[in-house]
Length: 479
RNA sequence: CGGGAUGUAGCUCAGCUUGGUAGAGCGCUGCGUUCGGGACGCAGAGGCCGCAGGUUCGAAUCCUGUCAUCCCGACCA
Image (cartoon, rainbow, N blue to C red; front, side):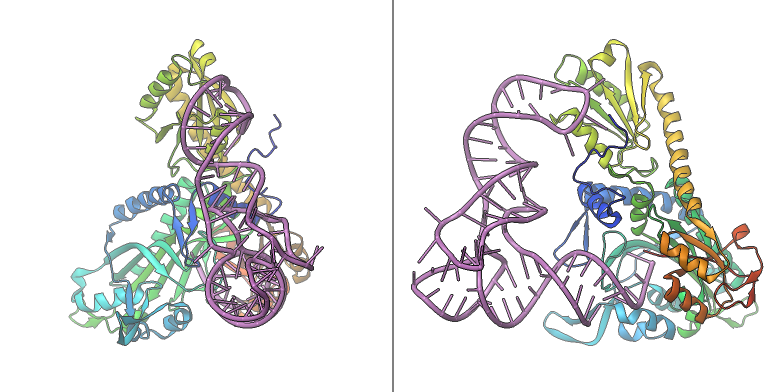
């Protein structure tokens, strides 16, 4: 059969309507369901299993770098939210308010946390006394609420699940190092576990977190050329700790304000996985986070010996992989499509013909290539195949990123290119908010980040106003 | 928050113009035949036609209101 033919008619073709394709996958692959409250999604077991696997990887890395998990209240009294001026201005317009307890009106209304900076500050104020307690390296797994006007599964919801790391440090430098370290953790997880290449950099002032001194980001490019912020790390300096009057006895027996960070990654990353790797037949999941890594499909399972052999393979593979044997009475063709839609990295087919020849068929999800493998070296072949799949997934995503990134100098070229197709534009910027605004109005592009490393090193003039500058910016359309 | 559209079975929708017993496909249940790319036959279950008023002998259908959802813009992890 033709390789480019779409197998599953229920999924809209990716090139026909990318947004609809994405929604189809979320629903058909049973990742989420809509709830009766707009913007609040139900994460179904398969979708949640993906999140659990991501959580595990992140959590291990947080623990390895000395962080501890804890849990803070869901509600924030209005007076507490008000304490840091920039922060409240940024979040107040989009919080949900609790005004009553039972039938009784509350003395002070409380918002459902949109993020927990002020809660951590309120806590630190009580427990921090001496430099000997620093740093405090905390993380919280939970959900937050932001009353968004438009919502989409994973990408934007009124409630979303995430982790938020919050730390305080004795010195500014220590906090800055922490900010960078956690950004590197996110980069590592994206590139080495999720197989999504990212661009690491700093946000411009207009794009930074409300209340932060500086915000850092990893930006990924989706298959349609749009950007998705995949993780952020903020350096707060002592802005919050001064606003909350958090002090400690320092090494000279004076009172000092600690320096603070926060960093987060959310279930939005699942959207990034879908939109980076998926194709017309459904998801393509990175093996590291796939709830099912290997699915065994018996062919003609009613025939003698087939199911027994399939079970035997399952018990062998279970030792190393999350393995599922589908012995329901759906047809093999139905099963093929089902697990392709769900993005299972490797399918093992075993039927009477295979058993005769002591072999099985391995089919990789990313390329759909078939491999006939002797049952004697199944494990070694499978291990190599999975490595190969991971490399290929990263390379494909990288190729998309590279081929859709252009470096431009003149505004007219930027306008022209951004009208033709979505992608990243590298262009110099003088640093003024005015020019950033103009880029948005004329070319429809927002600044994604000022990239680190080689990407950022250059000299020339601002693409908008022509002033000399050495600040490179990645511009793009964002989700 | 502005502009547009849509609410009928679990899902996708037909029926509404011209009022008169609630429909199809897919999915679901049961039995049988199948099984190497979403198999087939037969039998079944499933509905407050978004909600509230009104007109009428009679409303899914006409009128008014209301709620919800989706798309496009402005705002956003």
